[in-house]
Image (cartoon, rainbow, N blue to C red; front, side):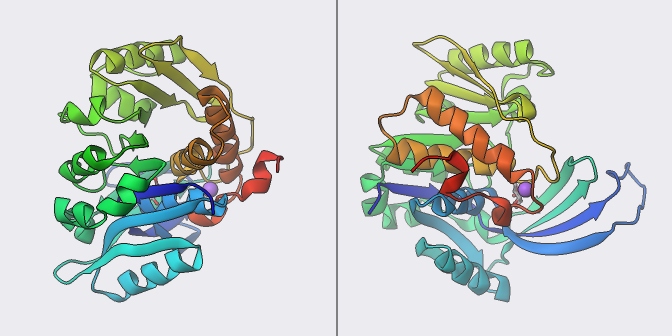
Length: 303
Ligand code: RIB
Ligand code: NA
């Protein structure tokens, strides 16, 4: 079997409305269709890695409602180990309300529900798998102290996806992970700097390194990603150019692919892994939806 990946994070049910454009504040506009999918950044990243063939265990919480049991079945069906996905008796399954415009832009409101109840004890119960993980993947849709506990146990490579961004982050969440990965908007929140161009992103990356990060990846959408490290030079990794249909979850496709590659392609440089993660993310935006749009291993055109 392949090397192990553990994702500690969120499971949400996505209610996605497709509309010609994003509504303005206070405005009502007509959508063309509304669909329901399995989402949440944690589970999305777990599924992205599993669809590439990764050996993935999810640590998380769903609610006591129908969605919760269905979510666990769904993950099992996609070969994600759910031994550490708990049903929470006093909370609803997390819900994300998403609007996707024709341009591919989106807006998201999340109600975390059971995800907020994930705690350090849940992480300790999974300590055997976390300690054995080649790659640990974390986000911020579950409590930050949960991520810190998991980082304390981790002996492999750790990736913290700083999403959604929080203004006053515990500095341990910057200094403990091997890789701190954010998009431009999140980089702006974490640094307090405007991030509107690649050169802004470079400045934000320097600031994040100064704040204690070991390696920083700032994803730049169609422009690929910036890879910066304490020790090395800054590398701008390009992305293939595609026609975007739905960019929702593209960041999760990127992180899941990166985790898969770092776990299973140890001969590859970080730069190569980031480049291929951009390939997976770009491919996912050419199809609607989140998890269902994530590619299999054939996307890399290698065996
Ligand atoms: O990153 C995309 C995800 O963010 C969606 O699936 C939604 O659940 C939100 O959490
Ligand atoms: Na997509």
